[in-house]
Image (cartoon, rainbow, N blue to C red; front, side, top):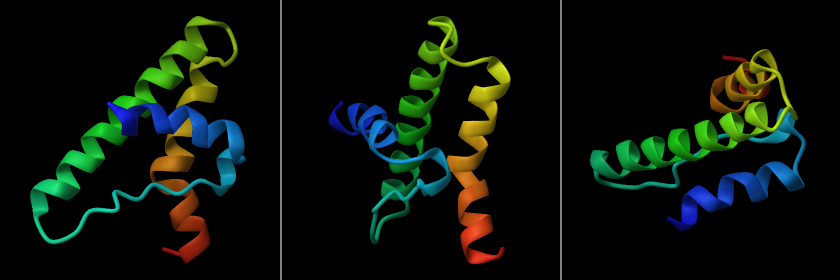
Length: 79
C-alpha cells in the first residue's frame, strides 16, 4: 500500500508538531473513510515499531498520534 509507506517518510522529514492529517478525499464519503483507515493503519504500525525498537516509549507514541491525528489541527485552527 503506497499511502501507508508515505507515513514514515513524512515523519522523517517534518517535526511531529507540524504534521496535519488530511485524507485528500473528495465527493464520496467512502473515500474519506478509506483515507482515515489507511492513515490510522500506517501510523499505528509506525508507532508500534518505534516502541518495539525502543526508540519511543508507549507514552511518546500516544502523544505523537494525538498530535498528528487532531492536536496539531486544533492548535493551528483554534478549534
